[in-house]
Length: 169
Image 1 (tube, helix red, strand yellow):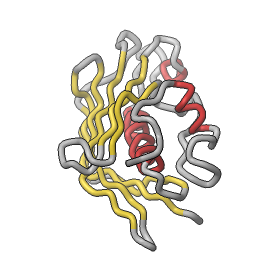
Image 2 (cartoon, rainbow, N blue to C red):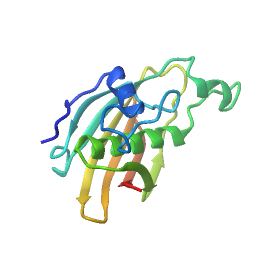
Image 3 (tube, helix red, strand yellow):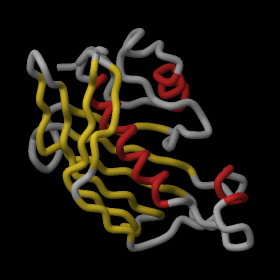
Image 4 (cartoon, rainbow, N blue to C red):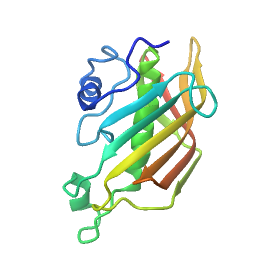
């Protein structure tokens, strides 16, 4: 069992962004405005659809978010890559939360489906991540997960085989 709480508010996420949560040189979230969530409501190392860990998180959408002004002026839409980045951020966070050492980095994703958009009138994104593998050996620390992003309860992004690793170098 991890030594950390199973939910985090914004201040807890900012603590991680500052490198204060998991220790120097370990998994770290980006700072705002690239931090793509406001809270983690659940996290585990043995829950989820496959019993290998999960994360549930939320991101409050407000019309004044930075990307709405620059992504298609006059037709504001959140870039889909930011939703994908949020999924990667949370996958790496889960690895650090497990107590595993090293800095996180995205390795790739097997499949991405974008079926909806995030416009300024949306209220909240919900991230749902289910790990299919969590591997820690002498040479490799990696998580493989599937993820969903919902906007106000509507599934808008789906990913399969998202990969994040931790490296001590």
